[in-house]
Length: 431
Ligand SMILES: Nc1ncnc2c1ncn2[C@@H]1O[C@H](COP(=O)(O)OP(=O)(O)OP(=O)(O)O)[C@@H](O)[C@H]1O
Ligand SMILES: [Mg+2]
Image (cartoon, rainbow, N blue to C red; front, top):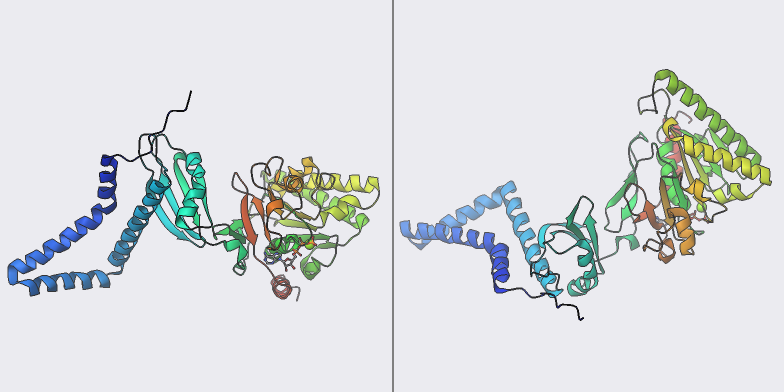
């Protein structure tokens, strides 16, 4: 049986309602101005009418709150009328002929964000089906539709007119002294800043050579180094990437399996000591004003440590690392690891799943991307293998939200890193 044809036209009543809703305030304001002019004319002729209008105009212009309220309201209503026409053109209409209502609109660095209240019968999924026609209608790069997580009758549309991720990301806002505060990581596809809080988290970064892992890692190391209460352990299979931070690190391990195992053993022992202290103090986890600070363990080129040495050494190392990641959270031990070769032998699933935050920078295959983010994300459209290879530092970040967010990290040049390292050494009294 052929599918019943949907009601996809606006009847005369909804059109009238649209006009009243879309122009009602403007009509009321125009009537009020006309009435004021008429009062002036009635009292003393046209001159007084014009004078009254002029005085009102000057009063509004000189009053900042009234002026911005008026400009904001009229602007939002104009956007609402414009977008309502777009919805009609793209047939985003319920079966009963009702249109979504534009409830809010704001500028974002990439274009504009619009909040829609959906009429009965429509869902964010249906709106998403019209994303491409809507983008074509308004001449945008893309229209992204996101269902409100708390309310299915609300949809958030990002109208993207330019891609902020292809532009240079704004300079890194050097964080406040405490690592307990969120760290700015970069910007998202809408151009909005993205921050992450490290306490009680571990972070895994993966991506092909040159994708931007070490740059991202350096943001976290810099933030940790600038907080004198934080202890830093650095492990660098390449040695050169983290070298600028040697002056602030408690341990710096190069490409040396034996030393890496010793340091990890020491870290696990430190973790146990911390738990003993917490137990004595009747606490379940460390606090920002507690006896000991956070301890950040940054590992660049995890693949080197997971692949080098003898089989026994590798087993010992991955066991210590797993222990540190799985139990370190409440003791303030934070592991941030970067790997060039995101495959199961480097990051076994049971280790990957212990990292609550993950970021997949550009990868060569969807499987590699899933190794970092988790099984199934590539199929859902979140694959780091489709990222533009020439735009470095872009990746999918799976952190606070339920789904990965595409971001581009801030970029610290070698000069800025050296500068920040010097600043951190000074703060720690090592200079
Ligand atoms: N967010 C960014 N913005 C601009 N350029 C970036 C960004 N991130 C990285 N780059 C550029 O990409 C280059 C490679 O970055 P990075 O050294 O972090 O890669 P990597 O993933 O660590 O590579 P490898 O696996 O070879 O160590 C940097 O030298 C820098 O020029
Ligand atoms: Mg690197």
